[in-house]
Image (cartoon, rainbow, N blue to C red):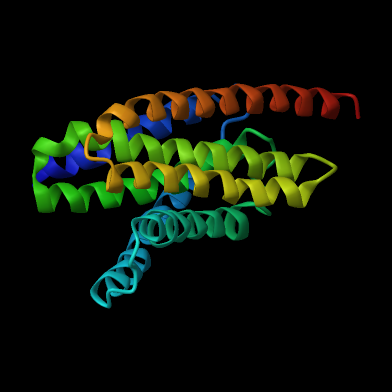
Length: 223
């Protein structure tokens, strides 16, 4: 059991540490980041319950609706809800890059507990595949969500557009990820380039958020 817990938790904490340490100015309080991680983990329970009901009642009839609505929209909306209503107005969210830290944190909290449950059910042999695909993809959906949340908070214009995109882009990307898994027999052939694209996009958003941070700090120094 200790091995399963270690294998389940390690990738999420490693990825969270990576994005946390990319903050080159004032790092977020560890307690706040872990609180957000915990909120993300708690989301697993209502989401699993709703998805279980949808499945047992046979309410989802198509792979497209399953991928984009019962999985992607459900999971990304709950994560976005936590990020927007619990973190967005918080005093510690004081730089654009903070959105990426908290976005990754809530996503990885969710992915980590989901990962532990999966490994308990299917065995620790799946740990590497889970780390490379579901856990890292959730991290990247969170990074992209957090980038646009940060842009929305610290950009004077089009705030609502950026807030909308903070949910829309992760929803589309997550839905595409699940649709590939559900519908493609040789899904790995398509998944590999998709994951490369997702990493490229996520790391690009990290770079852009760091640049926004530098500009934000510079502007404040002039006041």
